[in-house]
Image (cartoon, rainbow, N blue to C red; front, side, top):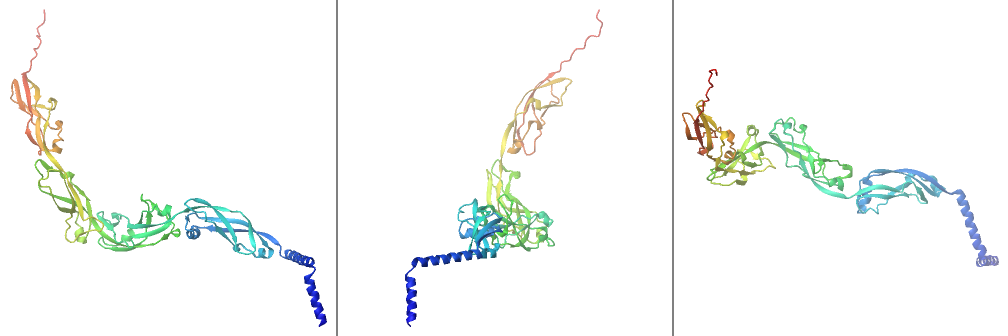
Length: 441
């Protein structure tokens, strides 16, 4: 028992005294441990090369998470880098223990950026000491969503083998598509257009309806096709159900009734109807011979100026209906002309002397009074003096001054209110004496 207490006291005395020696012992122990560890597991370096595809879809997640912009560039990074760490860790490290991080914190607007590239070790105990690629140029754009109308393109009637027949569809399902993607692409899209081909129409009679399932293409404001990468966009719909119907395009004819006011007339060639044609649907037996449909009556009774009527109904034959998307009413403009009187001056050079006795008389036209006519303004104003074939008949007239009616050739619609009169002076023709043939002495 006494020995135990003595040992205990010696141990306590050891820890209470010789402090410097004890600290030095601990330090030396640590140095020895570090030397042993370093020789067995030294710090080493190792190089790697990894490829990293920088796709829009990969960066889209990071960009949207930060509520900034999206990228439309596609590149592949090949990075050589060197790591440093203990031999035990370095020996077991592979390129799969590292990932690439692109720092998007500075992306705030649509433009090209030099994005920092960070090699991130997934293994504890190593650090990256150098890398060959530190930044990558990437163009960022806004992501927008746009609702696009889906339409069926005008169908070439020659596909049906009949020019007057029209294939159309107004009941697409869906009729709209939402497209989400880069602003430069989505912003330029104006419509989604479905093309109907001969294969869609083949082996069906003209009157038969068809239901198709079709995809579409995207077009800009100028009608140019917009190429899109559907893998980089979010598209709400991919196909549409397209019920096709067949109609016939017919000409619309106005129906003008009544008599215009005094001195007015209807200019038949200047009557305007808008639109000029309409597409109708109905039994093939009725459509086969149908080429023209009249409008309801438009009265010009008593009118003294142009008549315009909007919302004029179309008189459809029984069994027919207006095709969807085409108007059931039209606008008709009736142009009126005036009945006018006009004086036409005829010059001497435009009058022919008829039945003259040129062997006996000489005829001089001294003056001509104007020709007065009445008729439609377009016809009266269009009279050319050279077309009148004006002439005066002097048959049986002798020496003296005579007032003779000038005959002219005019359209039967033009009324002659007063004939032109020519003052013609007739004088005897001078006879030249023949020289005396007798010889001169």
